[in-house]
Length: 613
Image (cartoon, rainbow, N blue to C red; front, side):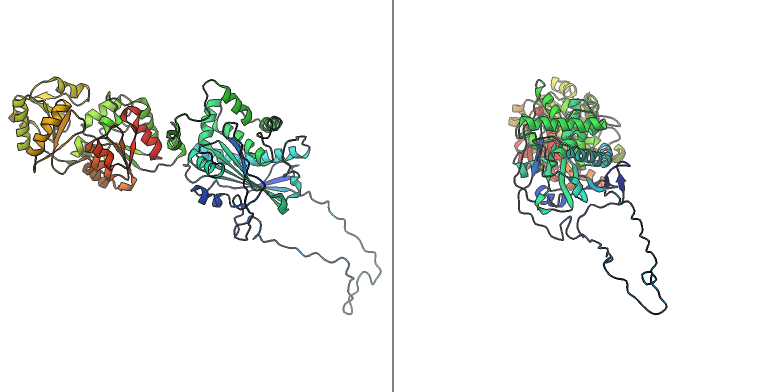
């Protein structure tokens, strides 16, 4: 069968109208994939031929495109050929009546007067408007967008009818009159596709060689030379993502802005082109305003709006950060994209936290936006759970509606404490007590501060400014000073130890000594340069993440991980996409799939906007 857009619902626009429209009862979804997929979305746009490829650019994002290539139609992919036409036979009025059989007398034989039937008044032919409203496959089922798509089923045929009526007595001198008398067609077909910036940017790049998003593209399928009974106007592609930004800037709703873009795209398909001359621009602007005002739709025409925006101080039509802006979604735009991952596992020190051990407002917004789109953000850190909750509470990311709480999953203390559904502990691994005894004896003798981590507690043998720093800067629980090594070991089971020193002291003394001393009983890792951690052998954040994923029934293909330290290596390797921040260790960067911005450049936010959707 041919890909004809025929649907059961037929609507007559007004009692005296010459038009009727066929509109889809459902919002159809197109396929994705740009050049290979577009022939399936717009089956004729890639087989049609016109004289030129016209690209308009001077206004903010507005453009009309018609394709130049050989026109090839087959019964398989044509909207016209391949249809079944029912031919009704007409009686031959010139044939004389036959005389048959005895006993049958006809009126002509009996010379009765023949009564001519009155011919009924010829019904006025109606023009069928066949409109298809689609949403691009990668556009999520956002309730507002679906509502707008439903509204467009009514609005687009209305705008088409009024625009066609305006062509009859048009006095415009610059319009291309390839489409003039629509009354000679049986059907007019038009497609409107709603998409996001990523889709329209690729389309813009493929067909206009302009590598940036735009708000609307018009693609004509009309070929006057074919003299077909169907006027295939073409396709209007609208980025709802750009439309949403413009709507906010211009102070009206997303529906208002999409109506403006639809009218602009429709006029391009009818031969208006503001790029031809100042006169052509004025004529198109006038027709835009006329259509919008006729229906009482809010907002100025796109031409007026674009000039108003361009004249605003500081307004930029395109982003200024060059290559970085192309693949990075904008803040507030994730609603227009489907998540690529179900889970994001994120480190804290050196990753989520900047150099001041704080979560920036930009990063907090990105995390909230990702969570609002159904992505589950899970903390995977060397910190204790109380420390993570305390820090994230400052940016409203802790608690019931946050990303961490006493009732949410998480990986803590370098993967040695793992909490599953409802925040219940599902895994714990402790350090060898004999190794702990040796480490605290070394700490006492060398006067090097050492902290023992035991679930939600921190224990030490003496007070020290660096010990206080662990609480005041890194927000760990305040360390309890124990009277002796034996008292400390008896007080609780220990999961890990942290030596605190200068970066030089750790690198030159502590790490060489304890790398050797822990063999077979433990291992040393570093998250930050001035701390050395001793953990049980064969453990890591990566192993903790794997335990949690198995508990939740989640595969690694659904996971994106963000980290910076050598203690994040296994986690980055495990994830489907591992992002190491640029401030991270060489080990972390060597195993990561991509290297992002630094923690002081909102690296987590950038990774979310660039890779997660």
